[in-house]
Length: 306
Image 1 (cartoon, rainbow, N blue to C red):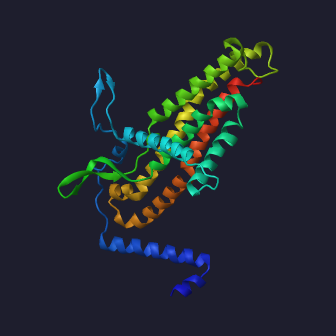
Image 2 (spheres, rainbow, N blue to C red; image 1 turned 180 degrees about the vertical axis):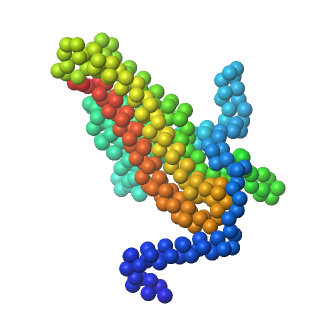
Image 3 (tube, rainbow, N blue to C red; image 1 turned 135 degrees about the vertical axis):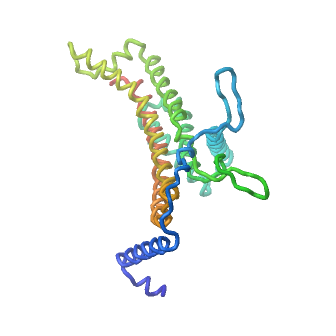
């Protein structure tokens, strides 16, 4: 049987797999049928932040929730990784050290040094490197199911434990906005420090623009700087949120909402494809983009030319 399957062409294998999938869906429909819609299920609650430990100082809410947990895990892993490797550097590195050194070289050579001069790179590489690894870890951890869903509980020997769910701190706009504001204020401060306030604002106008056109161009450039707050924060937030929503709906949310168990095999297959795509490409790509734009903004603010 296995020999016959191996002799089949790729197209025939795909057609055979599709036929098996359709057959399984028909079988489920025949056994289970169509169930009524489940209006009680609220998939958006997967992203609701219920306070685990209530902590308020006046009107300031510092309660601990699952977003805090994910941020803490990402921060600990980022710190531990760099300290661990730094203390165990070898002339003949193992696989872990090789992978971290490759990521280190990517952040320093391609991202940081490629967008600013040596002095700025030496000064800002620790921040950019930490930002890259922090976002990377936050994104990757977001695809690992953890017991963080307090809305649904699992009974384990009488103990009601939170159900497993996936969540990413970077799928929360407040987290990405804070990271963005740190970058935004930092590159403006560096630009003013390097050139002075007047010269820095004048550098927003491209060389060669003269006369009355300078005013409108300056306004457009000023607006573009504020738009960076939105683009930098929303890009990271929206990509992670969209990915998690797709996995949530395809992995079972749509089946529960529609009461259509027979489409489960198809949606699970799509969920697996989305999951692999997000983990392999999106998680690292978004960390790379955020770190690269940070370097570009810092390098552009202090560069002599516009």
